[in-house]
Image 1 (cartoon, rainbow, N blue to C red):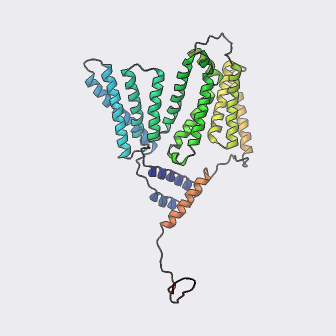
Image 2 (image 1 turned 135 degrees about the vertical axis):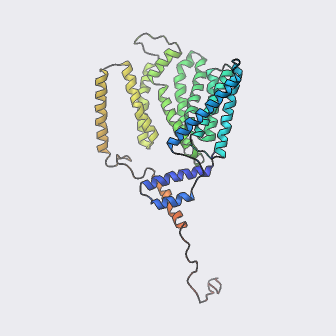
Image 3 (image 1 turned 90 degrees about the vertical axis):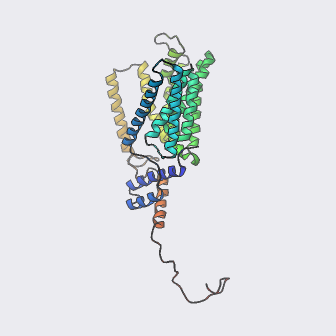
Length: 388
């Protein structure tokens, strides 16, 4: 299903590990270069600056081409059908060129493939909306189908974000139309759905056969964890209910089940942090720490206890003190955590890479004399011939 050469993708990972191992003095530069030659890939992957330049250049070329054709065909009169057809046509052409660049020119994260991927999806969705009146729910379904295909076909990590958001949007828009009870329980449905997406992506990320989708699955996990918290955050629920469901609240009046939403606002980040520490999962831990800021913002929005300047100063001092205390505490490893920079970020991977380098280095050495150095004599016992 994936468009890229699987062996080359594996070789890219090996090269990254080799570079990391060399930078940390696990292997020598000569060993790295020797092994890289044995695990070369045929991809065209420029550095980040050229990638950005090629992305912009591709967008400009496609946009100008589409604009020129549009001026020629639409010069006499404005026709939405023709314009929509042009958008869909250019989206299809962009996809065809993308397949060509990947399959025959072997572009991989070159900027060209990124631009063609995004422009293909945007043109097709835009063209469908120009030619017909499509509801938000239908748009969410169309986007979900397109980005899911792009994720599976090209393993683009950002497509994982759009897959998660579009799926949550489909559930929200569909379920919230089912009546007042549905509107009241929508946050809980979305919370359960986002949690299910997280566990599903977490399980998939452990499958060796899906190793090339690792980055996309990590982004899906991050987005789903944030969504679990966001959909039951008191601020989000209150303001969304007022804006979208016309909930009539007086100033200072709370929302139904407000105490439960306040509980989730505080409880979920604590669970993330505790679970991240317990399981040594970086994604859970970092998302939990990030959401602590959301707790502060939510409380500050509805309950002003101190002037903003004093609150920010006090918060900064507290965070500095906590950070200093943790640095001092973790100078010596404690329960699997340490402040010191580890020379080996992924020990098991480095062991595998080091074994690979040793094996390939010996394999690349000059062959020696194959003669056994023995001669004369004859032995025929134990089932061996007399020439043994």
